[in-house]
Image 1: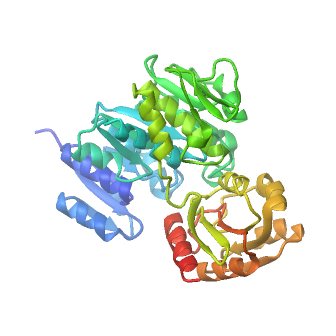
Image 2: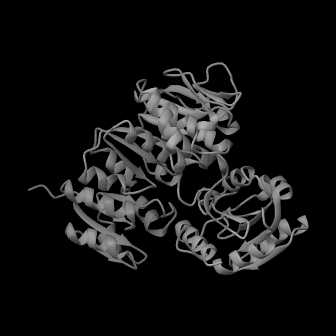
Length: 446
């Protein structure tokens, strides 16, 4: 009798637990190992499918006998166990790669340094409104693997990080959306920007002439890189200004969609405000149009979308001071977008786990828009050395309550307190969601 193929899953978060369930359902011998503690919900999920697991350590004898390993995106490629797997030439793939093998659904995949979650959610909103049988996956909601194991969708709208793309090989995006590329996660790419850029462009691998590539034409890095890759999908560039060959552009307060089907809508009718959301709306509109969704449905969806939690989310106004939760801004470029969209003078709360940040990008906006800075983190030395010379009032805090109180005392009525940290959350919080929830709770207690 043939030995059952063994799949080992490293990391038992949303992605790992989903991959384990899919592998089990497809008849593999499955084992899950996590260096950290596994959340109760995922333990229950694994137990209910009869999947063996361990937490708090990796037992090498149970891992290095795998035929294939599914690695959670959070585990770096230079982790000791990954190096050992490589030495034994055991293939390491991502959960998305595994899931792609077991579904014929059309894949609409979104990547970029910023705007991924908003654009992914927006495309999903349009597809749902159009009545499509569609799942939302990747960095949002249930993992793709779990949905492939338990649902039967015709389309998936998937947010993909560079980490997920790193371990994808045969997966094919029918529509690939690349929003922008700015320095992020360079700590995971040997501080080599080109390695990060190459990871993002992996979204195009395996595309055929029947597929589509939607991208922001004004991004200098995307423009520079386009010529390097043998691109097979049809190109759908979008731009802020009217240029020849654009699938979408804006002019005099109107967005024009030129391809594949022509229609337009007033910029004011968009549910999302700010220049970056103009691009996100264009990318979503083009993707929906390529998928055959009617113009009037796209118009309605772009006008009714509610936005994403922790992304420029209005919390409330307290004694004339507006509080905005942008906890999802885990890099400098995200904070740039947030500051750029501020209409009033702003007290900025920033800091956390620095990923090799270069603050030059936001310096002019900080000088123009900010009336105070609150540094929130265990190690604020870099923020002090960079921003203290700007002559703004600053405060050092190590809890969200202190951050909110310090910011509130700096802000005058008619001004805004913006949490847009530029950094990962792991020094003081469980996740950027936890950071945002704590911010909202503390603001409401003022």
